[in-house]
Image (cartoon, rainbow over all chains, first blue to last red; front, side, top):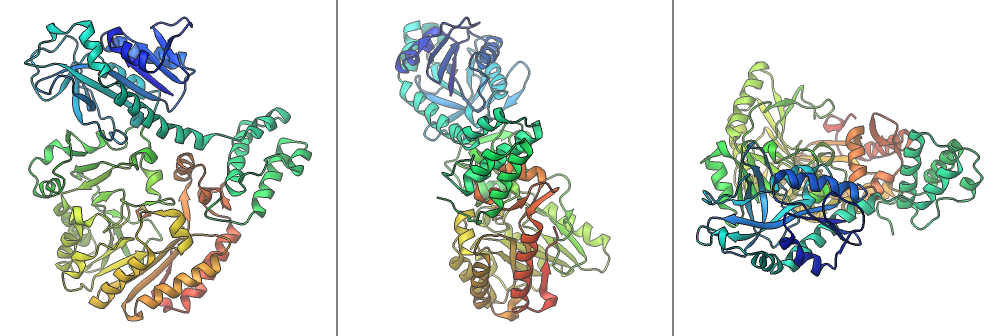
Length: 273
Length: 327
Ligand code: SF4
């Protein structure tokens, strides 16, 4: 799953169009757009809005873990060319001094810069940082929902010392994001592939669900069942979990015993398939 | 990406390392722990492209080695100039110990020397062993860290201190560049070809490591052979017999300082982390006793594996140089 969090409608429109997102009909605190497992929410400007929108979307999107969370938007910078796309390798909340370090492990191709989130627009651009108003609200909130590698801020330089923020029209904002829509979508897709591989590795056999309805398993036994099913899937790929012995078992304990016995008889190979 | 602790400023070793990566983005941080190991990091994802962290080690520079880690010495310690490893062995306990796969290099090597001196002072007149390959591979990242050159210089001046460099690498240039030291053992770890192919990702081939080992032995260095962890598989007997033949054919008996062996085992918490990172890994789906506090092979299999290897090794090395690693 990918979640895009954008502060302004003008920033969001190019991605909404490119990704074929539709306005969600669910009642939501913030506008939500969706196409399959790609979500986008428009938070409004500022850290509090960004944190609230991230939290709200987490619940709207069935609290999916290990999702990709991208805060995409415009940012100011002292002297980078207008239109430059950067990821944030640090996110600093200027008000509190808190700082986060998004791991830049899966962002090949996109150069990175520090990002400072401010409460009022920064017009002096005092250092080499990007300046926005959402990153430091979005990042810690999204970090509660996923793994740090998949939570990133992608910013397009919109204003600099030479190009004042006052000249930014809504149309221009849309154009700045639109110019990078492919790179942004590709980054999201690459991150999703990585996080999906974590999730699919943890998927359990549907037969586990069938066994859980057939017998009463304690919480500990459920964990044992899941792990035994995983181990059997690795050691004897393609073989059904419910064989004759398991089907005959009259209790949860007998099921676990039958599975363990089957596992014990399999030869140990270090490679499967 | 290279993260550098702000306080390191112009530390010459940090500067030397940075100079090797002129294109890398540099990011300052107050302490490396801000970047390394905070909540919500995934070792498996980070392993795809780990960053380098340059840091200063402030405390606990030299620590007592875990029981069962020694090779005949009475006082055993370890120290880590680095956390994590360029290789990716699926059984490696570092994956369970750290949430981050980034490489941390502590550049204040000289403080390790001070801590080694204080340790030696506590054991007046006695010899002490210092193991360097506990939280990393001692030599694999040596072209970057320059650790071996420093360590050899350090131990050359401390004859009462013994150093084990433990490695799966072939980075032996700094060793070959100088006269061998009688108080340094270069220990190579091996598993059979099947286990190597399935589990030791990015580790140089057995032949390349044997060639490196041979060069060191020819140059007069004392060699350690480490068969730890022993990995069980259906054909383990034939696999280990072949491995022992290959390894002992490559190194003259007179160069072998010590041989140690021990079965695969992991602290329970680490094991659970590894399973959650790699639930489809056959090693973790194997015949393990998952109820024990330390996870290892079922007792009967572990005993069979250990006994078999011990008999094989006794045929090849004197008992006083053979050590069974305790769990
Ligand atoms: S070589 Fe050693 S430290 Fe490196 S990954 Fe393998 S087991 Fe871990």
